[in-house]
Length: 309
Image (cartoon, rainbow, N blue to C red; front, top):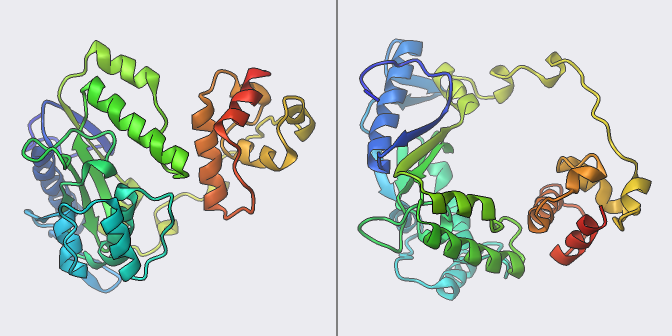
């Protein structure tokens, strides 16, 4: 792809074969600069009284350096327990389910993310934070990943795709350990994905850009409602749903029914052949998001439900 041409893009998820994340940062900053000029006539946009310059190049800052810059703590070489103690010193609300990657993410989110107003690439995430990302070619403890921060929020997330099936399986196993520890955001082992990698995947990098947030930044809007069609403008569609009694037939308690349907399992048959750990993780996410006073079921309980379908 020639990055000096074709400035019009309809898809904000882009995968580019045989390009690394450094090239992707170059591509992203040039893309955003051209979009801003096309929309505003210059490389600057004013959002909520703040002038944001999208003129390339943007600052590139490793995440651990960002944390050191904003908190004074250097996390390089620190293990999970040492980072946990730093979180306690910073008076952060943490719990024992959080592993090293989650703790680092919490520190960055609380003390760093909101401070980056001008476009800034946060780079070189520790391997514990990025289970799908290729190891950094110069430091195996890090990964080739970046997030672009603008106006105190994440606008883009990108990385060199991990295409080594052995490395990927080891990362999934570590995610399983975190899941068993109670981390609701830990990933499950995706055997289909591992099998696909075993057949072969070329060196690839990918980026996802939040199109709604991008439109807000480029047009100076401060609320997402200004750039979205409201849901009521879409035609209503009634989704068929099973009753609680139908779920009870396979041992699912009534309190879990709305959670499962929120996760997309509107019919009992929707659960057939689904990975039990995936279902349990989705339920845990919903319980956590909506602060429900419900204890999520175990993976074995979910497997028992599915086995009866």
